Amino acid sequence: MSNKLVYISGTPFWMTPEGDFQNVEMHDGMPVEHVVMRGAAK
Image (cartoon, rainbow, N blue to C red; front, side, top):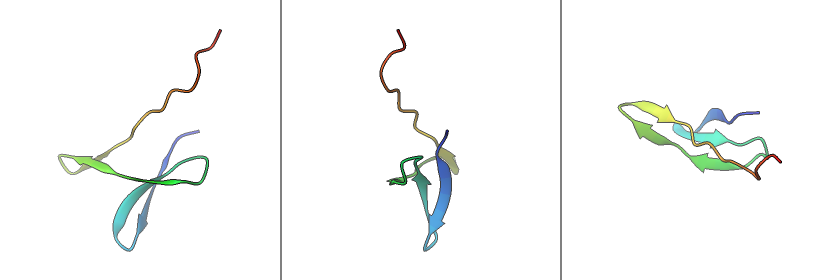
């Protein structure tokens, strides 16, 4: 599952699958999605 881009009062935030909101990093006017890696598959 990936993050969803949402706007709150005109400010963009990433909504994580856990329901948290994170600030959006913008690069050349486009949002940059951060990838979080959890535990290595064995």
